[in-house]
Amino acid sequence: MRQKTMLKKKLCMGMLIMVLAFGMMAIGCDNSGNNGYTNILDLFNFNTGNLNAQALELFGRSQADFDAMVAAAGGGWQGWVIRADELMLAWTDRSLSNFNAVATQLDTWFTELGSSIEDGRHSSGGMNYDLVFYSVNSSEDGFFIPAGLMRAVFFD
Image 1 (cartoon, rainbow, N blue to C red):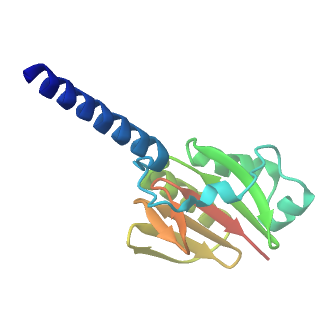
Image 2: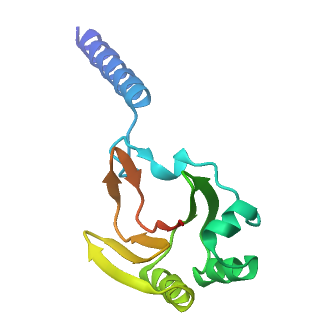
Image 3: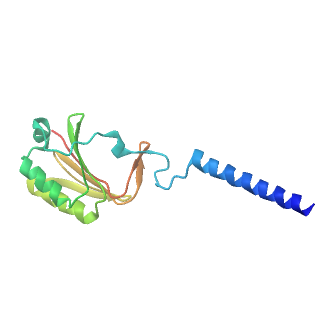
């Protein structure tokens, strides 16, 4: 009788483990901190090459100046994309010092009109650009924005 009880307990334990394993596979565990939101970087097909004529026009500077700005960020380069007549650039895994280096570089070329810090979002902007650095994970309009993301947008 005791053997039957032990066998029954082992069978129940085995079934419980199988159900838990299946549940974790089917549902999954989200450790990314994005709360199920789509990473905003997944929306864009970034180009990592030289700027084309339209992008250079939106940037308002030379390819050499563009390369200097990318280098000032210290790595993490994701690329550039044109969307809605704006040139957007993106870097990941950046720090506040990387943001400050790019902001300083932009201020030497264009006049900075203002800067702000709000909820871990550092921004600097001028007449034709906006530079933003996210020091904490964020979400906006249903999209996940990872900490360390830095983006610049240039427009006419």
